[in-house]
Length: 362
Length: 278
Image (tube, rainbow over all chains, first blue to last red; front, side, top):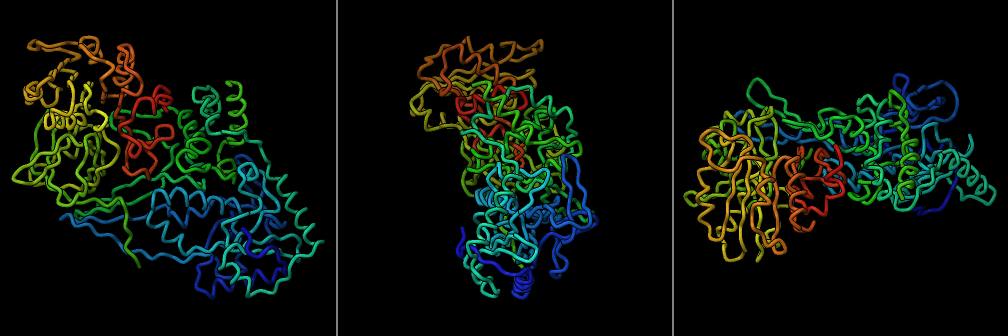
């Protein structure tokens, strides 16, 4: 929701916006080139923000090349900050005293976050809001989100299918769109966003610029590869529960759980015990994924020994079960699971195929 | 700096008594000072052995000793964590959190006949139902207990079967898959007992707990006898790591078994129950 409508300014206003966040004590996190990959990392200064690079993303392929204007999200998602891969829950001493460690809750501002990742935060809000993860909720409370709308969705993107992008519509503090090299469109989505824009020099969009903006938006939508989703998709997809299509698709699957790890909404975790020589132990929460062998293994059996069953569970969880559990899809169409799948399994193909298969049933 | 209030932090319980049930199954009676709510029949707790891990174990009894309530858990030593339970003795300490999940539909059982079908360790979560009927006999109709285990040695709680049979209007039928020479009872899987009992099907609710395969055959037998889908309740077993619907491991279709179950009405899960590796 836009509180201000659309304003525009020069790119230097972005630097000002960045510095305002810094001066307000935020740990500013945004896309940064680290070892040939766009990561989400803390940015010491605006100059550290990735620029003059572009990426090539295809099923099972990621390359960063010098030059060019547009890059998409890399493997990191906001999940990394809001729901850390590793978190100590407590320590237990030899005499059974439980010590809960004190943690520092960072004050985070995401800068130039993609709309799909903003949508992922909203999905996590539903999940963690329902489930009440203490750490998530503390970080989330202070979170500032500056979104960069995506004018050039990449080769594995399908946000338009999931209705999450390429232009953010709600849930941000500030959203900006680079419609030209020398012109940036801004809008505020919260009272804090208005406060932040208050520090900048901006002008309201005139009719000509508005048309230009809309053209950019339209082009972006067409590149975000919309797949038409039928009504009642979650129920429809369950008609494929007994389909052999999952066996065929999963023939390629390695069960590596990369898709789980890069997914901005996958929330499963394991809790492991780290025993120490002094007789104490630490309980640590770590990310887990439904593709890993141990996930559904129990003493004396396994609930999903075959990879196809794990693939089916993952797919139906994202597009069917999630809706029943949390009232929203578990997929935001970011395409990370496609890019980072070592064998390039494309969930868009699975989605198309499952819809076809299910409609055949009806 | 803040201390986070995680749901996953256990309380410390003391093992007050250990009872050997079978060579690799023991019941641990735990004293917990502040567990909170008293577990309802069919609910479970997460038991924690430091350095080992946590396991979800259903509550198999609540007993009162010297004015203090002890919560019983019957554990089979089968996995890496449960094996560590074999070292616990009177006075040992253990982590516990819970109780979790939806238990048996006690309210719905009022005034009706109750058919319990248990396989192996599946008798443990059903025992609190037997206790409830014993305590408030007038509130319920007939109680029929069908129980099967692999061998006579694997039968749980044999020392109290006479107590079950002493409950008025109660029948207990026990079977073993493989008999020994001294066994005088039924032989065969527990589902074979279902056609043997006289039932007023329309007025009966069936509660089922056991290995997944046993539950599938049980549902088939019950359907043969005319049970409707909403007269059958199943307690499912999954890998309930967190117990509070957080960690994802116990999902069966869209359900978190730990939170939406472990006890489900059959109609509710029917769609997923028969799907291979759901």
